[in-house]
Amino acid sequence: MSKHTQKMIASVLAFSLSASSVIFANAAEPTIQPDIGELEFEIKTTEWITLDGITDAAILFDFETGTILDVHDSITCANIPDTINGVSVNSIYNTAFKGCTKLVSVDIPNSVTEIGAGAFSGCSELKEINIPESVTEIGAGAFSGCSSLVEVIIPPSVVEIGAGAFYDCSNLAKINIPNTITAIGAATFIYCHNLQTIDIPNSVTEIAAAAFNGCNNLVSVNIPNSVTEIGSAAFNGCSSLQEVVIPSSVIEIGSAAFMYCSALSSIEIPSSITKIQSSTFKGCTSLTKVVIPDSIKEIAESAFKDCANLVL
Image (cartoon, rainbow, N blue to C red):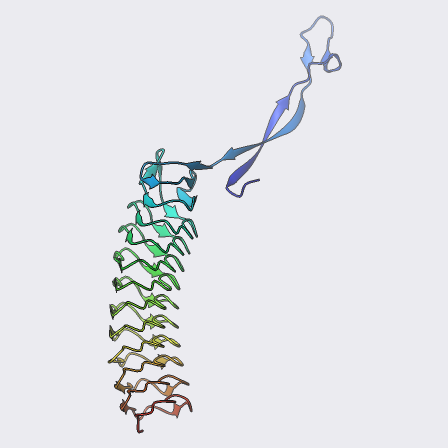
């Protein structure tokens, strides 16, 4: 039975009108003795349908939940309507458009509240995506591998961006993070090679592990004083990053957080930090000045390894 099909059991009366089940008594009306059985039947809530605006493909739609479940990978353009046969389109399911390598543009209606995990993963030709202000959640890996995306506007309605949401969007040059976001998840922008600047809003408290790992053209980043934690390898391999200010709100900097930031020339560690973790600034070959506060109780042996121009 299909995973998108509801199974219902209905009890029915199966009447047997055979001679053995009809009793005649003193010319009275015949008495019918019913046999009760069960009839199993299915009500399908999903259907493959073709729509205007969905080019070169059909979509699998769940009419009970209002969810786009799947799509033929031949699709080239998706102008998704807000209703399908009178049913509101509420969400795009996990991996619904995954691997649709011919898909060029997507317009999501303002009825959709959730973009599921991996929803557009591997859509390597996707150049344009419109995310409406109805969306509150972008799932993990939702746009991973969308290597043709250049710009994404995230509306202020979004409160959660999942881990790896823009993983390996190698041509992504411009993206905003709204002030409704409290954490930049693990590997959210990893290997976004064309990303040059990023402005982190003061609603963010955590920059998770590998969040900007491998963003080798990232020149500047604004870390607000709301951030308390910079995760391991958060900016690892950001070889064009020339300057970063770590605010006094930060109480933990993870291992390898700024490893191989080879253009970084100076850094001031705030007094809120008590330990410099292993490989935190490893391979920062341009680093010549580090301000270390009295609060530091421990510096890991490899914290400044291969910083050839640094004299502590």
